[in-house]
Image (cartoon, rainbow, N blue to C red; front, side):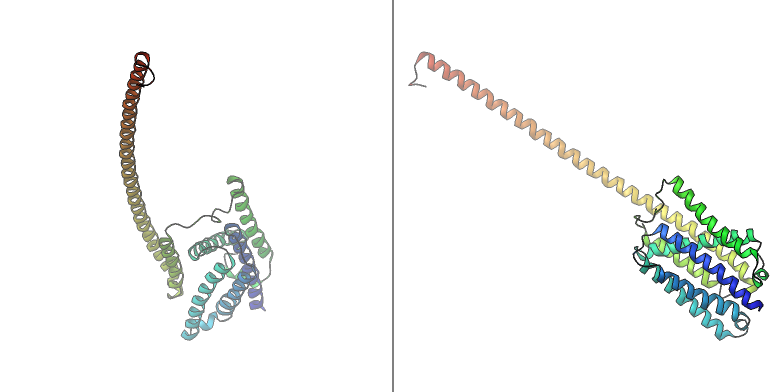
Length: 284
């Protein structure tokens, strides 16, 4: 009976997190297919990975390496399927969907962690009975999402879909960041439970160092691209200036030629007038 309550309460928590994730994805990306696909993917992930393996088979996984290996394979397949489904449901490229999925997961974990702390559900024993803490958790998650949504709508004047028409620059760099994020998540499955927390901090430090060096490298690359662009613009302006100088010289030469021609015509007209005055129209 206690395990049934654990499954029930965990399912409620998972459903709320799925709702928050889909709401956030709908705010960031333009949808082209029904969200039934992504709901089905998330629900299968919760039932197979979380409920079946982490709750029902958690004790067996500690002593049977084959079940643990199957769990890791299923985890990899679920991650790939999740990315493909997000790519199918929303109108964006693969890197953009990957980044939005990562941001969605981080925001959902952030909202869920705060809600768990507010509800006092820091200990898993609270999942063994249906209590008012589950209702408080659900309310807190939705409240955090809508508060964030209203705040962004307020400060961005209703233009929340920042990533809707934005095209991701440097897709290789952000793709590497996403693969690093996924790799850290899978690396935590390979360590023992008692060292998982320590390894998380270690991987976090490594990830932070890689991000810092990546940011420095990207900044240097952007600065060099900016310098090359400035140099090309400077060369283009010099060429344009030289062409304008040549054009002005040609215009001035044309003006001088026209003035000379005008003087010749004036001189000829004076001669014509003199001839007409003294010798008649025949000579003219």
